[in-house]
Image (cartoon, rainbow, N blue to C red; front, side, top):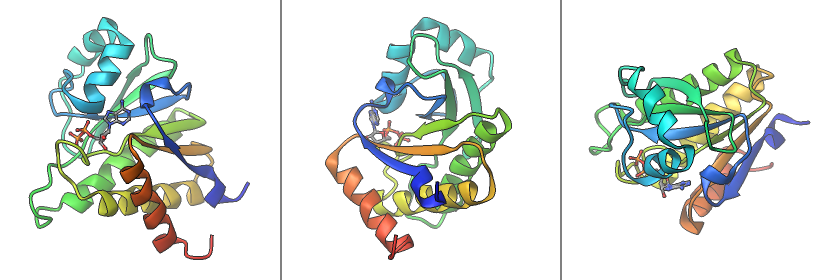
Length: 176
Ligand code: ADP
């Protein structure tokens, strides 16, 4: 399979995916929140919160892995995206770190399939197109270098987010 075909878009709810890991857009406490974080904790059940309590939080750009509990996904990788504050506070670099560090955990654990939420693009207000470009660039670089994960899925919760990924893909791979 070509490396381009190892990246996929899925429009829908991340908690429905039976993959090796879903990536949660968490906050620094790792103790749950709104948006996709709340949806993942509700679907996974109380045991996820119990495991997260032992992780002592997570810094922006870093990632930590837990089990998936009641989710169809085997694991949850929790990463903390940057809060957008105009773009001059290294927000793009920090968002890139989220993707690189999550993919490195998946690689080190030999995971085959990983599904990312659109980190930072909700309450944290990171511009959607720019975020999609970073997600696709970092993931393409990773799959071009490593065998694991074999497949990277970008979960778009709505049509607008999907359109950003499609536009970003065309910018990055005009002939693909
Ligand atoms: P952040 O605080 O990092 O911005 P949010 O959870 O507010 O995180 O939003 C991140 C993205 O996740 C947004 O694009 C939002 O539409 C999307 N989202 C919210 N709920 C779900 C869900 N159940 N599955 C997939 N994506 C979701």
